[in-house]
Amino acid sequence: MSGFVVNVIGLNVDPRLFRGLGDIRELSPGFAYDIAVDGPETLAAARETAGDAPWDINLVAAENRRKKLLVADMDSTIINVECLDELADMAGLKPQIAAITERAMKGELVFEAALQERVGMLKGLHLSALEKTYAERVRLNPGAKNLIATMRAHGAHTVLVSGGFGFFTSRVAALAGFHEHFGNSLIDDGVALTGEVGMPILGREAKALTMERTVAKLGIGHADVLAVGDGANDLGMIRLAGMGVAYHAKPVVAEAAGVAINHNTLEALLYLQGYGDAEIVRED
Image 1 (spheres, rainbow, N blue to C red):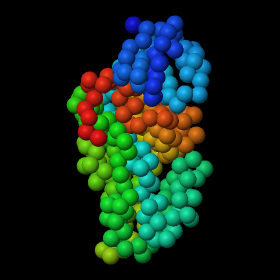
Image 2 (image 1 turned 180 degrees about the horizontal axis):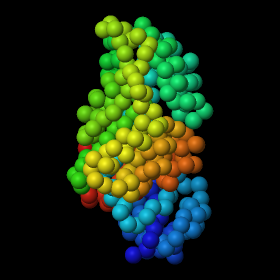
Image 3 (image 1 turned 90 degrees about the vertical axis):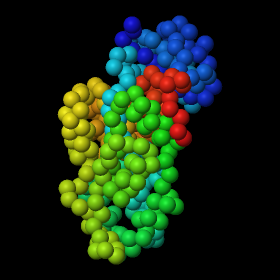
Image 4 (image 1 turned 60 degrees about the vertical axis):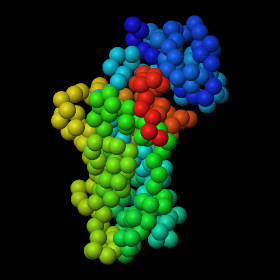
């Protein structure tokens, strides 16, 4: 067996283009293929061959591809929005708060301080805004249910971990099918938000620690973990995981992660692990 696999995912992939790079295995006709290679230098050749085609081409280790633990960020990864920004919209403050969110996700601000600042601006927001935000704005990203259902069907444990809020993680986890969820707490007085966040804040280090604790609980290793996210506060867990994936991510994350998905849905995380169409549980 070759030591590495170049994984190619995208619409209208022509596997004939990659002949000569290594043995090719079809995962999804015209869409996803594995190329068995001996070393990482073949990745550059595959990407050069693809040119400007909107395909995700990544190098992964051939061994231990199917992970036993999925740890996923929520906002802009499993779901389509940043929940805090949408709450801000309910308060008429979206431009101001979204600008801070963007800087935090790029790694330009300390996450914990940026979160406290943004939540502080929402002091007095009626609690009904949370349910309204969830009902009207929050949607699972394409492929989320298939990703979770397939990994669960093959024995993996799944964890949603967010720098966002438990109000949303609980609902999103149930909707997508995660085993567990972790998020921050918004403090309220029974009627409205007080502008405070429950302590300790779940940020970059806490996300990585949550992953570490779950690894220990399951009795597995870092090599058995797939971690996926899009923002700077996901870097800790992405760097520790055996397969760290930047999903439609900020540049600082895409540069640091071993794998990047820029063109495809969350289902791509299954093809990265070597799943073929016949093994994918379709729930989306």
